[in-house]
Length: 148
Image 1 (spheres, rainbow, N blue to C red):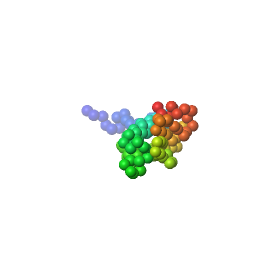
Image 2: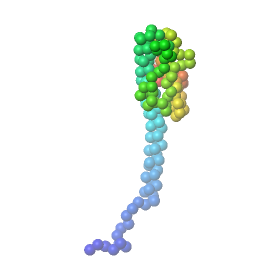
Image 3: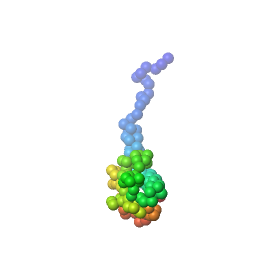
Image 4: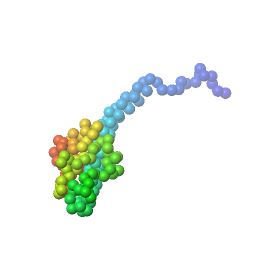
């Protein structure tokens, strides 16, 4: 026969148990959030490096067809709207540097936007030219650190 409600042991969560759980979640969040933002910043930077290489390949195809970078069948050369440019639009703007492309040269830049610009001060704007030279505008000691 079942016991009456007044004789059953109380079930549930005490306030102390709830507060301990909240503290543990807070500590885990305080450790995990900076790691997550650092990871997403590096992932965006790595993705845009690949995208710059894709845009450089496009420019080499333009040169192979026209024997110059600044013309594409009589029209000004424009970078194609590839999937990587679309996917990274919230983090980077991929564009030619000022005064580019030239007849024999080009410089393509990935300029950080939004949160990427505030989080990624070490590398800043990444650049790539027709000779394959890679650049960065941030405070990182070497360019290689930004292009991994």
